[in-house]
Amino acid sequence: MQNKLVGKRGGPEPKLAAALWVLGASFAFALLYASGKLSGGLVPALQIVWIRYVSGFATVGGIAAIRRVRLRQLLETRRRHLHLLRACCGIFGGACSIYGATHMPLADAAALALLQGVFVMILAVLLLGERLGLAQLLAALLCLGGAFVIVRGDSGGSGFALAGLAPYAVMLGALLTASEIILIKILSRDESMLSMLLHVNGIAALLFALPVLWLWQAAPWPVLAALCLLGPMAIVGQMCNVRAYRLADAAFLAPFGYSSVAFSALIGWLAFGDLPSLATWAGTALIVAGGLALIRR
Image 1: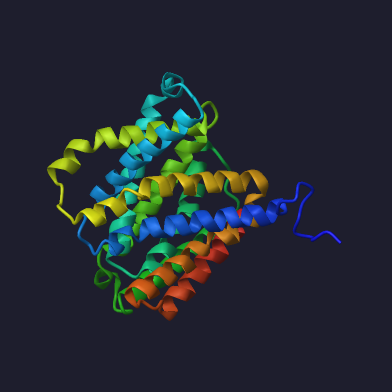
Image 2: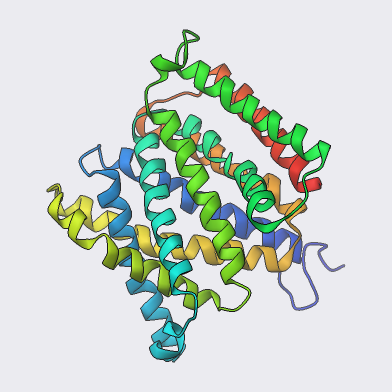
């Protein structure tokens, strides 16, 4: 009897394969968020993100060469201004997220980063003219309530001021990431994934080269070499997500995407001995519940 998990071509069922792709992407992005903390705080967040985009550009260029795609063909676009805006959202959003994750427990930062789903919905209503129903509004408020619980937990229940800048940096990073997602949705109507990846990595690397090199913080070569792996890791993570969403619906895959919180908590525990607090788990549960409700709607 043929195994139920084996499809007609001998591979896994599409849904199982899609779930594994999402888990792989979530782990890759959890490592990316933790990069500032794993580097011992020796490298500024903006420098880390810039290194990621430089190595990402090299990775995409290598993929294009292997596929024998002409560089001129990939660079042809009528929406260079949107690529520029996306690059700015990406590099500042990444810097905010990494800065926040460096200065607070990784599980808390990963949970707050999930707010990007709410921000995507709000921006879609404001910029794309999509409609917002009562159920979606209540789900969004549930997510924001979860963020409130996490930030209050980080402040020791004594007020938001004691929580420091880190939680707000992560939430700003989530907003900028959501803006980038909206731009990706607009750009994907006319351009290939490889072209979008080449533009965002190349523009970000060029645009911020002088500021980053001027503010460059010296670090051990092994640390810098490890940070150069972030670009390929981010590209692989994005490709894993694309592959997953081609195989299964977003409603099915959403719960697996929230595994980034579990991966971040595991990294924080193994590397730094951080154990998520009760407030973190409660807030995460509210954000996940609200996010799943949004997906279902």
